[in-house]
Image (cartoon, rainbow, N blue to C red; front, side, top):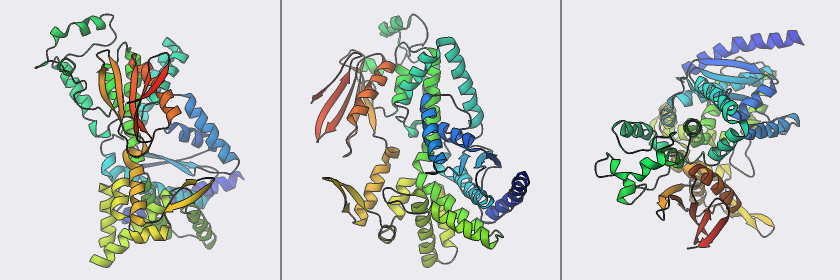
Length: 467
């Protein structure tokens, strides 16, 4: 058995450089690659945490238990995990056969090319991401030793409850904020016992024209980045809490492009593992096994979009149509352009055609009475619904409308309603977490049955009223 494992490792060590060379001939451009073969416990730990090194939290343990149980009962399997870093780390499952790991390695090369070249990833810095997350994890452990694990974990719970509510278009705002503070713009200095006194003395503000809070509107414009707004303006927040809040916000910026490009990224990696493996010198048995595995990856789902399948079909359709219209080679050039400039929303809006919707048998369905029924097959409506569901990577868009509501320092949030109602029990529980961060009553305006409703939490009880 040990000899067989060593032989397979040698085969993989020989195959990976060949695949890298083939990928280079296809003009794929990726970071230096680092492959490691890991047991299932390690792979699923990485999958649960999202990274090899990250702060600990009970929710990651919950995810690990669910995924590992599904693997143990042969219900699902993670074949690999790839990290958007430089160098790019790919972790292969030691339970894979040699041909499975070959295909996974080819798939990873497609992912890494996408990470390096897609414009939505250009705003993240993959150079030191693994190390920076490891350092943050060490800081969080130190906070637990100083302040107590329960207190730190409770604060992380509060932040994680709203961690998706960032504005990825405002990465530069952090630098602008630092500049304003250096220029003397009125901001509280966190962590001193005199913060409330500085807030009372508005005359000390050095901003030309005064602070926006004095001028009436606070914030001046609705603020989508709720984490940033709390980080800049929450009362009584200690330095260690600000560090955790800032770190989780930065990590969400790292993960956001992956959520924006799930269909494209998986489709691109599938497109290239198929072509790279075709160039490999496989035995007949390996070719059959590869065909079965690839078919399993792209099998359509009855209940949801399979990003591997849909992404692959769209890229192949783009290549075929551009080759037909402009000549051989134009299609390949076009898909590289799409890979660089698009995200899932523009990808589906621009390239999911009527013919593809029909070929992929895409439709909309919902529960009517006690049965699930198809309610729409018209291709434009299907496409538009898919695009709509990908807006803000599927999360509801909520903005800070007023950070001084009623002139009492309360926070007024507004849901930018787009025909999708919020989950009411989840909403009410989340308001509790926002209150614990803001330290003042919080309100959220949304719609139920097309009627405006205001949910509130004051630290003791929740309420709602139609407005």
